[in-house]
Image 1 (tube, one colour):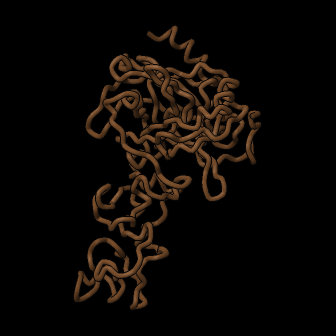
Image 2 (cartoon, one colour; image 1 turned 90 degrees about the vertical axis):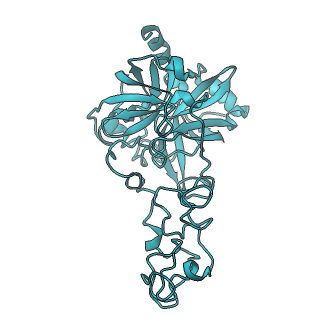
Image 3 (tube, rainbow, N blue to C red; image 1 turned 60 degrees about the vertical axis):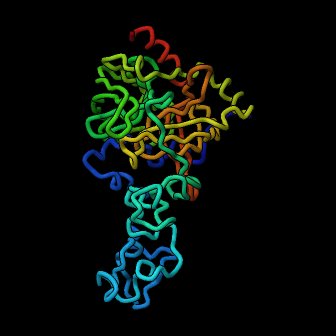
Length: 361
């Protein structure tokens, strides 16, 4: 196999980047997920949704409560809320009133406000248009390795994901340190919280220093693919929390080494984990995803399920008694009806990490 020189549209306008919830501070997750969260299903006419026999639509279709007059709340015209009132008619994948609101509402896996199979957008492990095929993310135990070494990097306006690669060093994406997507105005990273899981965490520390690659231009990165391989960064912490949370090593292999492993099929089962926008303070992981295509600029496409908030999250493999970071989540590019997730390969930042280790103790 030879490394691909690029992809259709190289060095032109980029697709929407995988942002770390920066520029969404103070907004609910649904607003930040607007590129793929459509209007609530209640306002749509989803295929398979029970039709109104009155000619008028019910705004509260499939919300678990009968809303027809006489037998329900009366909020809907007679015959327009057939499933809730009489359990009649087929149900579409996102027919529930509460679908597409950023919270899983199916029984067993969510709040139970929706019938089974009607909130597929928000519930993991079911078909989802936010990904290529299914959303295969799962929640993991952040008190255990390797998940404890992955954390949420808090900035002034939002967050990104990151991974400890030394007791005081966090690896993340360079674009996480800027105020807006197309701006070069920097913002401070405040702290890194390792192993965050709702109200509990493994450890946290303030960020005291940021290291970005020379030549990274955030505004330019928003407009072109020409500097994709520079979207990596390190955050130096005040405290050595990696001694408690654990840390991963960065893959020392060259581009040629990565190519050989790709050809041998070794990269067909990797893991990725980060703090997705629809989970906020709970770590989601996709285990067993694959590297799909390598590029000469030190990036690669993969099929790990990642969304906003996952920027800077690691793609990694086990190695002896530890784990090796193969790359970090950076961006997403459209491809027909789907999208290609892109990561920056470890060989783009290995030397910088090795030099930083000599300096930061």
